[in-house]
Image (cartoon, rainbow, N blue to C red; front, side):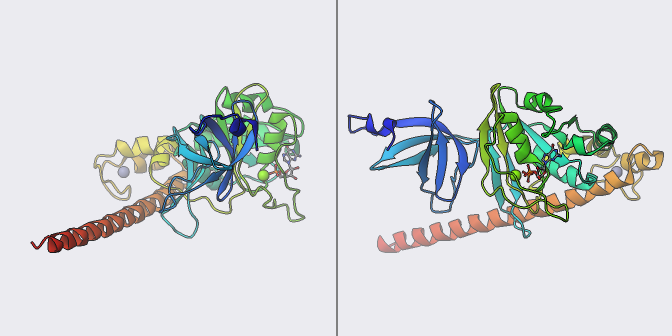
Length: 337
Ligand SMILES: Nc1nc2c(ncn2[C@@H]2O[C@H](COP(=O)(O)OP(=O)(O)O)[C@@H](O)[C@H]2O)c(=O)[nH]1
Ligand SMILES: [Mg+2]
Ligand SMILES: [Zn+2]
């Protein structure tokens, strides 16, 4: 048992505030103000709600011999993905971020569509997104790729290498005094970046397989304090990242959204409608067909999920209504009405 729980002499349980540095099912590790990490148990509500995730600020209390998370503070921002398999449920990957880095390894030709998808998810968190092109030591065309990503996706780009240390100060600057979350596919180089930024090996990295693809070794999300202040969060290697809603699209595709907003008809399908600003830009070559189609595909995915989520909500509300109507009827019957 740690000093904090033993020091309480009165019967009032001692309560302290800390930040979740690692989330596991049922137990989280919480950083105390003194920099110590302690394990605290999570007792979720009946619907599984209120499960803390990495980056959450929580209140911890000693209950008997164990420490328990008794409160999760409302999240300022949250990085979420739609759970795989077409579910409309969201999985929170990290909370209370000030910036999100979409990490892409330059050892492979980055797919613009994949980066776009990650940018949508990143922007939907409520924090600004930057593309971090890492493993620059493995590519001679790093600056060209950076240029292409900026012009094609309209996103800010940082070029760096965990191996040589190039550009790491720029990555750390994204965190500032706040929290930077790293998002990217497995093997992109996220964990190596975290270790390089921290100046020590705090999280496990994976060795590249013969086929050049990374292995899934980061099973737990982790939050690491940076020497210059600020925090960085490593998210696990995800096989798929589903967009959750249309909000992230508005930021990640600001160029296309702006065009769409100036179409003559508010419900323009950007096909054959007169006064379509999107088609005009496609014809003029100021908007690429690739980007337009990427936008449309992600929009369809997000809209479909939004409808699914609405349907689920409506079903839940219906169930609740039926339950309360039944309860009311029982009550009236019992009172002889
Ligand atoms: N040459 C080089 N290799 C890197 C760099 N960053 C990561 N790697 C390698 O890429 C592989 C995957 O890195 P890792 O950090 O585990 O990726 P993660 O799955 O995104 O966390 C490992 O073999 C690393 O050694 C880098 O900047 N330069
Ligand atoms: Mg990793
Ligand atoms: Zn249009």
